[in-house]
Every structure is written in structure tokens, then in C-alpha cells.
Length: 226
Image 1 (cartoon, rainbow, N blue to C red):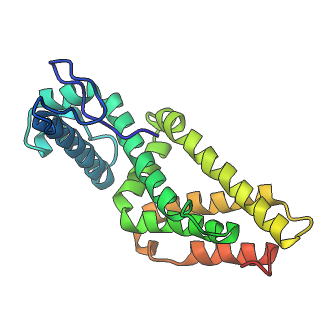
Image 2 (cartoon, rainbow, N blue to C red):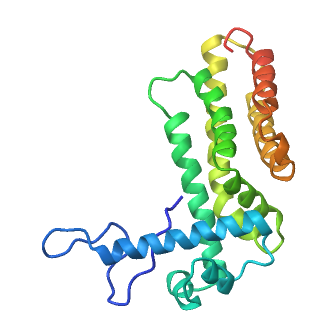
């Protein structure tokens, strides 16, 4: 998962960490470029969340930020590359929250499982526009393949980690015959379905159904661990 960065400026400065001037200060021009690129990404997310995919054009985005179409093209080149940057940004933000909550040092495997469910729930509540746009990318025929290419590897990695955590709970608790692979996939379906449902039924976004259903399944499988 990559964090989107501003395009390489015309003078050929390399992308990546903020360049330093000869006096040892951060290059303000590069920082302005990064801020400009992020503003375009944020505006794109807002427009898609509010209006859907069809009406979002480079020219429309430029108008929203009060700039020229040339600036948007300079940073991203095309709408497809801009959409790619949006998806990479969303993946990066979710990965950051996952690292802060699920991969937090000192948690037991059972606590990490609960944290993974709550991570998805908190992400949706804190950033409803982000999740709505993510769902729309995966639902639109024109962007589905792009989303699959960028997001699916991360989704599979989260699923694999969930399988390992559930297997640890089963092993540590001495549980026999628990199908941890199916349980991990079932929890994943719950999360994906909750995001989809909340996107198209925003009045249900405050529901505790995801957490409660997940805990019911976990307690049935591991009665002494949850």
C-alpha cells in the first residue's frame, strides 16, 4: 500500500521524502506540491461520495479547488491515475488504523480479533465518505478492475492475518474442531457487507449489529476466550 505523492516537478526532483534545500530546510515548493496533490485527492473523494462516479471529471475537480485543469493533469496525468491515487490513499489510511489498533503491541490473539472488527467499524464511522467511495469503486464496472488490482491484495492479507489469529485462539484455548478458515471468511463477509449496507443506508451507520454479530460467532466458537 502506497501513500500518494505529488508528481515529480519539472526540475526533476525525485519523488519520496521531502527534499531539503542547501541550507538544510525542507523544500517549501515540494511541500506545496504535496499539499496540492492531497487537496485534489480529498476533493475527488468528496465529489464521488456526494454525486457518484459519472459526473466526476478532471475539469470538475479543478473547478472545485479553484484551479486549472492543467494543475490536476500535472499531478496525476489522467482520471484513471487520479482514481488509482485515491484508492492507494484509502488503502494506506485503513492500513494505518489497522496497525494502530490490531497490530498494537501487547494484545492477545483474541483481543486482536475483536480489534480487527472494531477497526472496520471505527473506520466507517470516522470516515463515511472514504468508505462510501471505496464501495462505489468496487461496485462500478469501470473502476472495479482498478479496485481489485489495488485493494484485493491488502484485503487478502487482512484475511490471512485473521486466519492466523483465530488459529492462535484455537490453539491457546485447546479448542478442537473449530473451522477457523471458514470463521475468518465469515467475519470478512460481515465487514464487507456492513460497509456496503451502511453506504446505501446511511441512517443505519450507527448500528452495533456488526460488532454484536461478530461477538456472537466468536463466543459460540470459543466460549472461554471471548
